[in-house]
Length: 68
Image 1 (tube, rainbow, N blue to C red):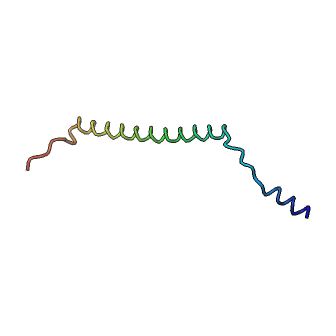
Image 2 (image 1 turned 60 degrees about the vertical axis):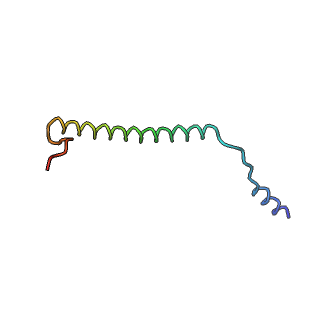
Image 3 (image 1 turned 135 degrees about the vertical axis):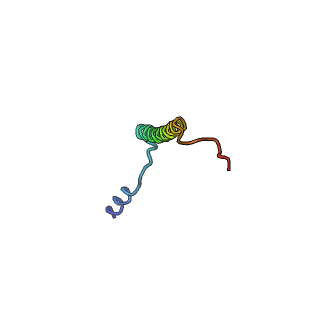
């Protein structure tokens, strides 16, 4: 009987609440990852715009439709 009570006492888990330090670290990490992805997106858009204007300046492309 004492063994059954001992097993039952170990099965009871008490929720202590959120670990504040861990939550802060998770939040900062998630923010840095999202910010990095957003920054990479903007760098890609900036590169594409620069390439477009370089080709436009060289005359390799035009924004005016050709007459048929």
